[in-house]
Length: 112
Length: 99
Image: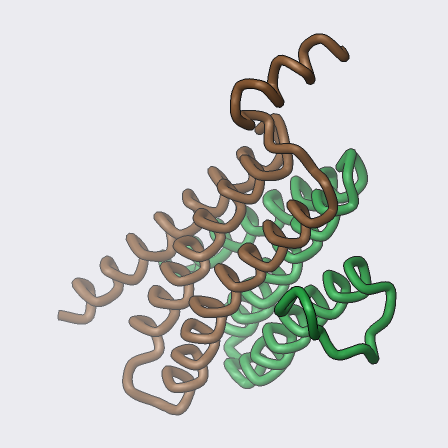
């Protein structure tokens, strides 16, 4: 039984690390702000939730689990909120998405 | 060194690598929004790494600090965005809605 709980925790931690790594690669390699936001926002939320979940499984029913639950809930709500605010701010700051509607894109092509 | 310790150490190493990636994007980032995104991600990773190191060291009390970092990270990101958009932290966001 203890081994099963441990294995669940290992799987959660490892998959969380994998998702974070994918998000990191996306942040580094994707072409513009909005695509990077997509990689970072989604991968971050899921990876952080999985790692916090893995730690929760490991700690059992204690105060530590409650604290981890608070961290998990807080990250779960604030990470998408921050990404949304960032996207709105970037649009208000006149950053053009790479896949903007066609006229914009052609204008960009003729410029570059 | 038990298997759980190994998994925790591996996860910590992965988080450190991702922190390096986020830092690289914060330095490279062509626009200021790239930098804010990278710094926000770096802050999330800080929370996770504090929790993981707390478990590795057998001192889960570190979680209080991690919770504090999560709060400060969010407020900091929103504050920087508001400053970018209005050039002033004291002004209420009136005509165009929130940031």
